[in-house]
Image (cartoon, rainbow, N blue to C red; front, side, top):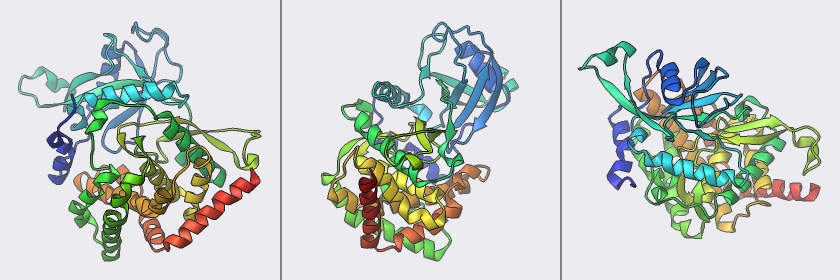
Length: 396
């Protein structure tokens, strides 16, 4: 069943009330759930970064008591515990699993879901604040969706040098991903939307009070105005489809690829080998996936290279997934819109929960980048990116 408009606004309402939705997980829960629900015994686990959920990289013993996972995956598993709001809508996981199956058939490397010992794709678990409290009738608890995925070995892109060759490869991968999702449909995505969807960018106005710097607040207001005036009226000319929605430097896995004889071989040091975290998937416009990626890749580049990041990404993307003139024209504003989302929502999440340092990941380099990108004349940036695209064509 699809969530209603009121239900999809649930997370925003909790955010406005400054309610933390990240799961609070007691000691021993990870070991218990992996053993009892998945028939695997934990050797060790490590928590990974996550904005609103809890993710754990789990290694287990060699033997399995799970008939649906008779051979233990040698690379370990990811235990995902969804936040309090998303856990109310199991349909989001059903839709996500359907998408993963679809794009895996198109040779897009994504995690595989592990069934529970009873053959279910997920479980709904009561989590008590303290392990011993579950014996008490009056103990308070929260309910979260829990699932297990096979871990994809590789390094997150953030841990590698942000070179032109890597950016080119990322762009090419996004093009392949965009092509792979063609033809996919799941009814859940017909109405699913949330705060991070760029179509909902105007909702950011309700959270900008956390931006204390006057100049930064002015830039956010200008981007909001430009997006509403220059991007939204043009959506009828954008290519529509299902997008990943969070192509950032921590959701992309890479590995060294020596001895390439493909395009620009000397530059191809790292290539994409995996894509993670499909919680931001929406059925919207493909140009937004590209804008999201350019925003995050630009942040991690050396400041002197930030304005060129988009050009390298587009050079890899457009031969695989061409863009029209209107999409290219709105790209700068869309990139800035995503930067505004990341910076403002991050600041607000930290305002909610000061222990969530991950929410401030983009702040240090993100604000200077937003100012730089927004203050660059559109014609100058488009020409800069087009020069790089043309230069790759000449060297191919």
